[in-house]
Image (cartoon, rainbow, N blue to C red):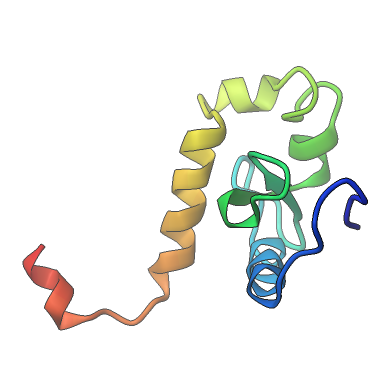
Length: 100
C-alpha cells in the first residue's frame, strides 16, 4: 500500500520493493514476505525488509519502542547495511572488482 503523500514508485523502485519484500526480516529473520520500511519516506532504495512486529509492533517495532532492535543492537543504518549485504550475496562476482 502506497501513501498518497508521496510520488508513485518508478518501475525500478517497484522492482526493488518486490526484492525487499521477498527477503526475511532483517532484524529477527522471520521468513518472507516482509514489509518494506523506508528510512526516509519516498526513498525506496534505502529501504529494508521488516516483519510486521519489527516494523509496526508497539513494543518491538521501529515505529514503537524498538525493543527488539535494541536487543540486536541495530539501528536503521546498520539494518540498511545488512540489507545491502544480503542483496549482493547472490550477485555474480566480477574478476575486475577483486583488485579493490
